Length: 65
Image (cartoon, rainbow, N blue to C red; front, side, top):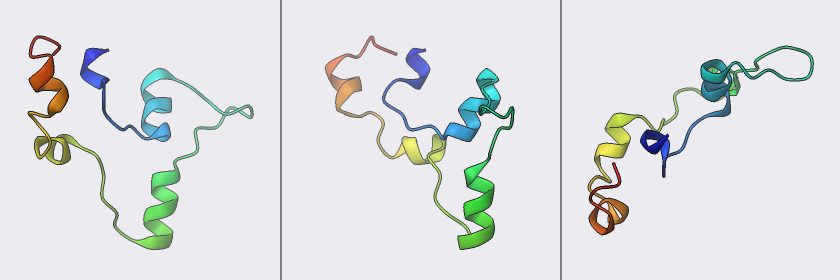
């Protein structure tokens, strides 16, 4: 889990990864809806996080990761 600490994840990606569903059994993908309605949007992927690393947490706790 340390790999996910301090990061932002979408509910639809986590639902797929961990098998979570809504009460009705579906896994809504808000990202697909937003892309269709509003166009391209920024995502928090490894490229995004490379801007922040090493961040304050990594400098304070170098053995954390």
